Length: 436
Image (cartoon, rainbow, N blue to C red; front, side):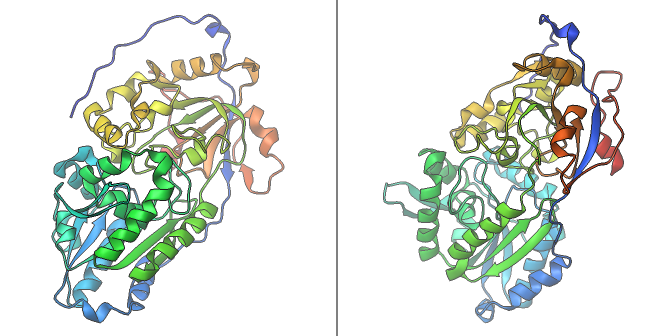
Protein backbone atom coordinates (compact mmCIF):
# COMPACT_ATOMS: atom_id res chain seq x y z
CA UNK A 1 0.00 0.00 0.00
CA UNK A 2 1.15 3.54 -0.74
CA UNK A 3 -0.04 6.19 1.71
CA UNK A 4 1.01 9.85 1.86
CA UNK A 5 1.03 12.06 4.95
CA UNK A 6 -0.46 15.33 3.75
CA UNK A 7 0.72 18.49 5.55
CA UNK A 8 -1.53 20.66 7.66
CA UNK A 9 -2.89 23.68 5.83
CA UNK A 10 -3.08 27.26 7.03
CA UNK A 11 -4.19 29.90 4.56
CA UNK A 12 -6.52 32.85 4.62
CA UNK A 13 -9.55 33.43 2.41
CA UNK A 14 -11.05 36.88 2.67
CA UNK A 15 -14.57 36.92 4.03
CA UNK A 16 -14.32 33.63 5.93
CA UNK A 17 -14.82 35.40 9.24
CA UNK A 18 -18.35 36.33 8.19
CA UNK A 19 -19.45 32.77 7.36
CA UNK A 20 -21.73 30.93 9.77
CA UNK A 21 -22.64 27.25 9.58
CA UNK A 22 -26.45 27.13 9.29
CA UNK A 23 -28.87 25.57 11.72
CA UNK A 24 -29.82 22.02 10.72
CA UNK A 25 -32.75 19.62 11.05
CA UNK A 26 -33.02 15.89 10.51
CA UNK A 27 -35.50 14.63 7.94
CA UNK A 28 -36.75 11.23 6.88
CA UNK A 29 -37.24 10.60 3.17
CA UNK A 30 -39.72 7.82 2.41
CA UNK A 31 -39.36 5.30 -0.40
CA UNK A 32 -40.97 2.05 -1.45
CA UNK A 33 -39.72 -0.30 1.27
CA UNK A 34 -40.93 -3.61 -0.13
CA UNK A 35 -38.19 -6.24 -0.01
CA UNK A 36 -37.54 -9.96 -0.21
CA UNK A 37 -38.33 -11.16 3.30
CA UNK A 38 -36.91 -14.68 2.89
CA UNK A 39 -33.65 -14.33 0.95
CA UNK A 40 -32.64 -17.97 1.11
CA UNK A 41 -36.10 -19.39 0.49
CA UNK A 42 -36.74 -17.12 -2.49
CA UNK A 43 -33.37 -17.93 -4.05
CA UNK A 44 -33.87 -21.67 -3.62
CA UNK A 45 -37.33 -21.49 -5.16
CA UNK A 46 -35.92 -19.59 -8.13
CA UNK A 47 -33.13 -22.13 -8.59
CA UNK A 48 -35.60 -25.02 -8.56
CA UNK A 49 -37.27 -23.55 -11.67
CA UNK A 50 -34.14 -24.17 -13.74
CA UNK A 51 -34.53 -26.76 -16.44
CA UNK A 52 -30.89 -27.80 -16.61
CA UNK A 53 -30.24 -28.64 -12.97
CA UNK A 54 -30.18 -32.36 -13.73
CA UNK A 55 -27.25 -31.83 -16.09
CA UNK A 56 -24.86 -30.45 -13.47
CA UNK A 57 -23.91 -33.66 -11.63
CA UNK A 58 -20.13 -34.05 -11.49
CA UNK A 59 -19.57 -30.68 -13.19
CA UNK A 60 -17.12 -28.07 -11.89
CA UNK A 61 -19.06 -24.82 -11.69
CA UNK A 62 -17.48 -21.37 -11.19
CA UNK A 63 -19.52 -18.75 -9.31
CA UNK A 64 -18.62 -15.09 -9.72
CA UNK A 65 -17.90 -12.89 -6.69
CA UNK A 66 -17.74 -9.16 -7.42
CA UNK A 67 -16.51 -6.10 -5.59
CA UNK A 68 -19.85 -4.34 -5.12
CA UNK A 69 -21.36 -4.25 -1.67
CA UNK A 70 -24.54 -6.35 -1.69
CA UNK A 71 -26.58 -7.05 1.45
CA UNK A 72 -26.62 -10.73 2.44
CA UNK A 73 -24.14 -11.59 -0.34
CA UNK A 74 -22.49 -14.18 1.90
CA UNK A 75 -25.86 -15.91 2.48
CA UNK A 76 -26.73 -15.69 -1.22
CA UNK A 77 -23.40 -17.11 -2.36
CA UNK A 78 -23.45 -19.90 0.23
CA UNK A 79 -27.00 -20.83 -0.76
CA UNK A 80 -26.00 -21.18 -4.42
CA UNK A 81 -22.97 -23.27 -3.46
CA UNK A 82 -25.01 -25.59 -1.24
CA UNK A 83 -27.72 -26.09 -3.86
CA UNK A 84 -25.20 -26.86 -6.57
CA UNK A 85 -23.59 -29.44 -4.29
CA UNK A 86 -27.01 -30.93 -3.59
CA UNK A 87 -27.43 -31.34 -7.35
CA UNK A 88 -24.10 -33.18 -7.48
CA UNK A 89 -22.01 -30.36 -8.88
CA UNK A 90 -18.59 -29.24 -7.63
CA UNK A 91 -18.85 -25.46 -7.20
CA UNK A 92 -16.03 -23.04 -6.57
CA UNK A 93 -15.82 -19.24 -6.39
CA UNK A 94 -13.78 -16.86 -8.55
CA UNK A 95 -13.23 -13.18 -7.76
CA UNK A 96 -14.65 -11.29 -10.75
CA UNK A 97 -14.01 -7.57 -10.42
CA UNK A 98 -11.76 -6.37 -13.25
CA UNK A 99 -8.94 -4.31 -11.75
CA UNK A 100 -10.45 -3.68 -8.32
CA UNK A 101 -8.49 -4.73 -5.26
CA UNK A 102 -5.42 -3.12 -6.76
CA UNK A 103 -5.52 -5.56 -9.67
CA UNK A 104 -3.88 -8.27 -7.54
CA UNK A 105 -4.94 -11.69 -6.29
CA UNK A 106 -4.31 -10.65 -2.69
CA UNK A 107 -6.32 -7.46 -3.09
CA UNK A 108 -9.29 -9.16 -4.71
CA UNK A 109 -9.35 -11.88 -2.05
CA UNK A 110 -9.28 -9.17 0.61
CA UNK A 111 -12.32 -7.53 -0.98
CA UNK A 112 -14.52 -10.64 -1.10
CA UNK A 113 -13.27 -11.91 2.27
CA UNK A 114 -14.45 -8.60 3.68
CA UNK A 115 -17.95 -9.47 2.50
CA UNK A 116 -17.83 -12.78 4.36
CA UNK A 117 -16.99 -14.81 1.28
CA UNK A 118 -14.25 -17.11 2.57
CA UNK A 119 -13.56 -20.77 1.86
CA UNK A 120 -14.54 -21.67 5.40
CA UNK A 121 -17.82 -19.73 5.31
CA UNK A 122 -18.80 -20.86 1.80
CA UNK A 123 -17.75 -24.49 2.13
CA UNK A 124 -16.13 -24.45 -1.32
CA UNK A 125 -12.73 -23.48 -2.75
CA UNK A 126 -11.98 -19.93 -3.86
CA UNK A 127 -9.72 -20.01 -6.91
CA UNK A 128 -8.17 -16.59 -7.47
CA UNK A 129 -5.92 -15.60 -10.34
CA UNK A 130 -5.32 -12.58 -12.53
CA UNK A 131 -4.58 -14.87 -15.50
CA UNK A 132 -7.11 -14.97 -18.31
CA UNK A 133 -7.92 -17.02 -21.39
CA UNK A 134 -8.99 -15.59 -24.75
CA UNK A 135 -12.66 -16.23 -25.55
CA UNK A 136 -12.89 -14.30 -28.82
CA UNK A 137 -12.86 -10.75 -30.04
CA UNK A 138 -15.18 -7.89 -30.86
CA UNK A 139 -15.65 -6.66 -34.43
CA UNK A 140 -13.27 -3.78 -33.64
CA UNK A 141 -10.56 -6.25 -32.63
CA UNK A 142 -10.89 -5.81 -28.86
CA UNK A 143 -10.09 -9.20 -27.25
CA UNK A 144 -12.68 -10.84 -25.00
CA UNK A 145 -11.12 -12.51 -21.97
CA UNK A 146 -12.29 -14.74 -19.15
CA UNK A 147 -10.72 -15.62 -15.79
CA UNK A 148 -8.69 -18.77 -16.38
CA UNK A 149 -10.42 -20.82 -13.69
CA UNK A 150 -13.90 -19.90 -14.93
CA UNK A 151 -12.81 -20.53 -18.53
CA UNK A 152 -11.65 -24.06 -17.70
CA UNK A 153 -14.69 -24.90 -15.57
CA UNK A 154 -17.54 -27.02 -16.90
CA UNK A 155 -19.90 -24.10 -16.35
CA UNK A 156 -20.24 -20.59 -14.95
CA UNK A 157 -22.86 -19.03 -12.68
CA UNK A 158 -23.08 -15.27 -13.11
CA UNK A 159 -23.99 -13.59 -9.82
CA UNK A 160 -24.27 -9.82 -9.58
CA UNK A 161 -26.57 -7.00 -8.62
CA UNK A 162 -28.23 -5.01 -11.38
CA UNK A 163 -28.15 -1.23 -10.96
CA UNK A 164 -27.70 2.06 -12.82
CA UNK A 165 -24.07 2.66 -13.75
CA UNK A 166 -22.14 5.66 -12.52
CA UNK A 167 -20.44 6.61 -15.80
CA UNK A 168 -22.88 5.91 -18.62
CA UNK A 169 -26.54 5.23 -19.38
CA UNK A 170 -27.90 2.56 -21.69
CA UNK A 171 -30.05 -0.54 -22.14
CA UNK A 172 -27.56 -2.49 -20.00
CA UNK A 173 -25.48 -0.81 -17.29
CA UNK A 174 -24.14 -2.50 -14.13
CA UNK A 175 -25.34 -6.07 -13.99
CA UNK A 176 -24.79 -9.55 -15.36
CA UNK A 177 -23.61 -8.39 -18.78
CA UNK A 178 -21.05 -6.05 -17.27
CA UNK A 179 -19.88 -8.90 -15.03
CA UNK A 180 -19.07 -10.77 -18.26
CA UNK A 181 -17.47 -7.88 -20.12
CA UNK A 182 -15.33 -6.52 -17.27
CA UNK A 183 -15.60 -8.50 -14.03
CA UNK A 184 -14.61 -11.89 -15.42
CA UNK A 185 -12.13 -10.28 -17.82
CA UNK A 186 -9.93 -9.39 -14.83
CA UNK A 187 -7.32 -6.61 -14.99
CA UNK A 188 -6.13 -7.43 -18.52
CA UNK A 189 -9.55 -7.62 -20.12
CA UNK A 190 -10.91 -4.65 -18.20
CA UNK A 191 -7.97 -2.57 -19.45
CA UNK A 192 -8.63 -3.51 -23.06
CA UNK A 193 -12.34 -2.80 -22.76
CA UNK A 194 -11.90 0.58 -21.06
CA UNK A 195 -9.48 1.81 -23.72
CA UNK A 196 -12.41 2.76 -25.96
CA UNK A 197 -13.93 4.97 -23.26
CA UNK A 198 -17.07 4.94 -21.16
CA UNK A 199 -19.04 6.62 -23.94
CA UNK A 200 -18.87 3.30 -25.84
CA UNK A 201 -19.98 1.07 -22.97
CA UNK A 202 -23.71 1.11 -23.72
CA UNK A 203 -23.04 -0.21 -27.21
CA UNK A 204 -20.14 -2.54 -26.52
CA UNK A 205 -21.14 -4.36 -23.31
CA UNK A 206 -24.00 -6.27 -25.01
CA UNK A 207 -21.71 -7.17 -27.94
CA UNK A 208 -19.11 -8.72 -25.60
CA UNK A 209 -21.73 -10.45 -23.47
CA UNK A 210 -23.53 -12.03 -26.42
CA UNK A 211 -20.27 -13.34 -27.87
CA UNK A 212 -19.25 -14.70 -24.45
CA UNK A 213 -22.64 -16.38 -23.94
CA UNK A 214 -22.37 -17.94 -27.38
CA UNK A 215 -18.98 -19.51 -26.68
CA UNK A 216 -18.94 -20.18 -22.93
CA UNK A 217 -21.08 -22.58 -20.90
CA UNK A 218 -22.94 -20.20 -18.62
CA UNK A 219 -25.34 -22.47 -16.77
CA UNK A 220 -27.51 -19.71 -15.29
CA UNK A 221 -27.49 -16.17 -13.97
CA UNK A 222 -28.57 -14.74 -10.62
CA UNK A 223 -29.62 -11.09 -10.68
CA UNK A 224 -30.28 -8.99 -7.58
CA UNK A 225 -31.92 -5.58 -7.22
CA UNK A 226 -31.74 -3.41 -4.12
CA UNK A 227 -34.33 -0.92 -2.91
CA UNK A 228 -33.70 2.58 -1.59
CA UNK A 229 -33.03 1.15 1.89
CA UNK A 230 -30.16 -1.03 0.66
CA UNK A 231 -32.20 -4.22 0.97
CA UNK A 232 -32.75 -6.88 -1.68
CA UNK A 233 -36.14 -6.30 -3.33
CA UNK A 234 -35.82 -8.68 -6.28
CA UNK A 235 -34.01 -11.98 -6.82
CA UNK A 236 -34.20 -13.64 -10.18
CA UNK A 237 -32.51 -16.81 -11.42
CA UNK A 238 -32.50 -17.01 -15.21
CA UNK A 239 -31.63 -19.53 -17.87
CA UNK A 240 -28.70 -18.69 -20.13
CA UNK A 241 -30.89 -17.65 -23.06
CA UNK A 242 -32.82 -15.19 -20.86
CA UNK A 243 -29.83 -13.37 -19.33
CA UNK A 244 -29.66 -10.50 -21.83
CA UNK A 245 -33.41 -9.88 -21.75
CA UNK A 246 -33.75 -10.08 -17.96
CA UNK A 247 -30.64 -7.98 -17.29
CA UNK A 248 -32.36 -5.09 -19.08
CA UNK A 249 -35.71 -5.70 -17.36
CA UNK A 250 -34.08 -5.76 -13.93
CA UNK A 251 -32.23 -2.52 -14.70
CA UNK A 252 -35.59 -0.83 -15.30
CA UNK A 253 -36.75 -2.02 -11.87
CA UNK A 254 -33.50 -0.84 -10.26
CA UNK A 255 -33.89 2.64 -11.74
CA UNK A 256 -37.36 2.90 -10.22
CA UNK A 257 -36.16 1.78 -6.81
CA UNK A 258 -32.94 3.83 -6.50
CA UNK A 259 -32.85 6.37 -3.69
CA UNK A 260 -32.60 10.01 -4.73
CA UNK A 261 -32.77 13.29 -2.87
CA UNK A 262 -36.24 14.82 -2.82
CA UNK A 263 -35.01 18.38 -3.29
CA UNK A 264 -32.56 20.08 -5.64
CA UNK A 265 -30.43 23.17 -6.28
CA UNK A 266 -28.42 23.41 -3.07
CA UNK A 267 -25.21 25.15 -2.15
CA UNK A 268 -23.23 22.38 -0.43
CA UNK A 269 -23.75 18.62 -0.40
CA UNK A 270 -21.80 16.83 2.34
CA UNK A 271 -21.14 13.12 1.72
CA UNK A 272 -19.71 11.46 4.81
CA UNK A 273 -18.26 8.41 3.08
CA UNK A 274 -17.61 7.08 -0.40
CA UNK A 275 -16.38 3.63 -1.39
CA UNK A 276 -16.52 0.78 -3.88
CA UNK A 277 -19.09 -0.97 -1.70
CA UNK A 278 -21.32 2.09 -2.18
CA UNK A 279 -20.84 2.70 -5.90
CA UNK A 280 -18.36 2.04 -8.67
CA UNK A 281 -17.50 5.73 -8.58
CA UNK A 282 -17.44 5.83 -4.78
CA UNK A 283 -20.53 8.05 -4.79
CA UNK A 284 -23.42 7.53 -7.19
CA UNK A 285 -23.70 10.41 -9.69
CA UNK A 286 -27.34 9.44 -10.15
CA UNK A 287 -27.63 10.97 -6.66
CA UNK A 288 -24.93 13.67 -6.59
CA UNK A 289 -25.11 14.76 -10.22
CA UNK A 290 -21.29 14.67 -10.30
CA UNK A 291 -19.59 12.43 -12.85
CA UNK A 292 -16.58 12.58 -15.13
CA UNK A 293 -18.88 11.53 -17.98
CA UNK A 294 -21.82 13.45 -19.49
CA UNK A 295 -25.43 12.48 -18.85
CA UNK A 296 -25.72 13.07 -15.10
CA UNK A 297 -25.72 16.87 -14.99
CA UNK A 298 -29.46 17.18 -14.46
CA UNK A 299 -29.82 14.42 -11.87
CA UNK A 300 -28.92 16.81 -9.05
CA UNK A 301 -27.43 20.30 -8.72
CA UNK A 302 -25.06 21.43 -5.99
CA UNK A 303 -22.45 24.19 -6.11
CA UNK A 304 -19.95 22.41 -3.89
CA UNK A 305 -19.44 18.74 -3.07
CA UNK A 306 -17.65 18.03 0.22
CA UNK A 307 -16.54 14.41 0.71
CA UNK A 308 -15.44 13.64 4.26
CA UNK A 309 -14.03 10.12 4.12
CA UNK A 310 -13.84 6.56 2.79
CA UNK A 311 -15.76 3.49 3.89
CA UNK A 312 -13.72 0.72 5.58
CA UNK A 313 -15.00 -1.65 2.87
CA UNK A 314 -13.36 0.49 0.17
CA UNK A 315 -9.95 -0.77 1.37
CA UNK A 316 -8.60 2.79 0.99
CA UNK A 317 -9.65 3.08 -2.68
CA UNK A 318 -10.34 6.77 -3.33
CA UNK A 319 -12.10 6.34 -6.68
CA UNK A 320 -14.62 9.19 -6.92
CA UNK A 321 -12.81 11.53 -4.55
CA UNK A 322 -11.62 13.53 -7.55
CA UNK A 323 -15.23 14.63 -8.06
CA UNK A 324 -15.21 16.52 -4.76
CA UNK A 325 -14.57 20.24 -4.54
CA UNK A 326 -13.16 19.92 -1.03
CA UNK A 327 -12.16 17.27 1.51
CA UNK A 328 -10.04 16.99 4.65
CA UNK A 329 -6.45 16.10 5.39
CA UNK A 330 -7.67 13.08 7.38
CA UNK A 331 -9.50 11.74 4.35
CA UNK A 332 -6.48 12.10 2.06
CA UNK A 333 -4.21 10.43 4.61
CA UNK A 334 -6.53 7.39 4.48
CA UNK A 335 -6.04 6.82 0.73
CA UNK A 336 -3.97 4.01 -0.77
CA UNK A 337 -2.90 5.96 -3.83
CA UNK A 338 -1.25 3.07 -5.67
CA UNK A 339 -4.32 0.83 -5.45
CA UNK A 340 -6.64 3.71 -6.35
CA UNK A 341 -4.60 4.71 -9.37
CA UNK A 342 -4.37 1.12 -10.64
CA UNK A 343 -8.16 1.09 -10.73
CA UNK A 344 -8.41 4.54 -12.35
CA UNK A 345 -5.61 3.88 -14.81
CA UNK A 346 -7.35 0.71 -15.92
CA UNK A 347 -10.70 2.38 -16.52
CA UNK A 348 -8.97 5.40 -18.15
CA UNK A 349 -10.81 7.85 -15.84
CA UNK A 350 -7.68 9.39 -14.36
CA UNK A 351 -9.63 12.58 -13.60
CA UNK A 352 -11.02 10.56 -10.71
CA UNK A 353 -7.56 10.50 -9.18
CA UNK A 354 -7.32 14.26 -8.81
CA UNK A 355 -6.76 15.53 -5.30
CA UNK A 356 -9.37 18.07 -4.15
CA UNK A 357 -8.56 21.15 -2.12
CA UNK A 358 -8.35 20.10 1.53
CA UNK A 359 -8.38 21.61 4.98
CA UNK A 360 -7.47 20.27 8.39
CA UNK A 361 -10.93 19.37 9.66
CA UNK A 362 -14.62 19.29 8.75
CA UNK A 363 -15.48 22.67 10.21
CA UNK A 364 -12.82 24.47 8.19
CA UNK A 365 -13.70 22.57 5.02
CA UNK A 366 -17.41 23.29 5.33
CA UNK A 367 -16.85 26.98 5.97
CA UNK A 368 -14.67 27.23 2.87
CA UNK A 369 -17.23 25.30 0.81
CA UNK A 370 -19.92 27.80 1.81
CA UNK A 371 -17.63 30.78 1.28
CA UNK A 372 -16.79 29.72 -2.27
CA UNK A 373 -20.41 29.33 -3.37
CA UNK A 374 -21.47 32.05 -5.79
CA UNK A 375 -24.45 34.38 -5.62
CA UNK A 376 -25.83 33.12 -2.31
CA UNK A 377 -26.86 34.67 0.99
CA UNK A 378 -24.17 33.30 3.32
CA UNK A 379 -26.63 33.59 6.22
CA UNK A 380 -29.07 31.27 4.43
CA UNK A 381 -26.86 28.57 2.95
CA UNK A 382 -28.75 25.56 1.54
CA UNK A 383 -26.85 22.53 2.85
CA UNK A 384 -27.56 18.80 2.95
CA UNK A 385 -25.55 16.08 4.64
CA UNK A 386 -25.89 12.38 3.76
CA UNK A 387 -24.07 9.31 5.14
CA UNK A 388 -23.41 8.02 1.60
CA UNK A 389 -25.35 7.77 -1.65
CA UNK A 390 -26.94 4.42 -0.71
CA UNK A 391 -28.53 5.59 2.54
CA UNK A 392 -30.77 8.59 1.99
CA UNK A 393 -33.69 7.86 4.31
CA UNK A 394 -32.53 9.83 7.36
CA UNK A 395 -30.35 12.82 6.49
CA UNK A 396 -29.66 16.39 7.59
CA UNK A 397 -30.64 19.60 5.84
CA UNK A 398 -30.26 23.26 6.75
CA UNK A 399 -33.39 25.10 7.84
CA UNK A 400 -33.44 27.13 4.64
CA UNK A 401 -34.24 23.92 2.72
CA UNK A 402 -37.40 23.29 4.75
CA UNK A 403 -39.68 25.23 2.35
CA UNK A 404 -38.66 22.79 -0.40
CA UNK A 405 -39.86 19.70 1.47
CA UNK A 406 -42.43 20.80 4.06
CA UNK A 407 -45.47 20.07 1.87
CA UNK A 408 -44.29 16.68 0.57
CA UNK A 409 -46.01 13.57 1.91
CA UNK A 410 -42.85 11.50 1.33
CA UNK A 411 -40.60 13.62 3.56
CA UNK A 412 -40.90 14.04 7.33
CA UNK A 413 -39.05 16.48 9.60
CA UNK A 414 -37.95 14.41 12.59
CA UNK A 415 -36.08 16.88 14.81
CA UNK A 416 -36.12 20.37 16.13
CA UNK A 417 -33.55 22.79 14.63
CA UNK A 418 -30.06 22.44 16.14
CA UNK A 419 -26.52 23.64 15.64
CA UNK A 420 -24.34 21.16 13.75
CA UNK A 421 -22.21 19.37 16.39
CA UNK A 422 -18.43 19.09 16.06
CA UNK A 423 -15.94 17.32 18.28
CA UNK A 424 -12.98 19.05 19.92
CA UNK A 425 -10.86 18.59 16.78
CA UNK A 426 -13.43 20.19 14.49
CA UNK A 427 -14.85 17.00 12.97
CA UNK A 428 -18.58 16.40 12.54
CA UNK A 429 -20.23 13.95 14.92
CA UNK A 430 -21.78 11.04 13.05
CA UNK A 431 -25.23 11.08 14.63
CA UNK A 432 -26.61 8.31 12.42
CA UNK A 433 -23.80 5.95 13.47
CA UNK A 434 -24.71 6.56 17.09
CA UNK A 435 -28.37 5.89 16.21
CA UNK A 436 -27.48 2.47 14.85
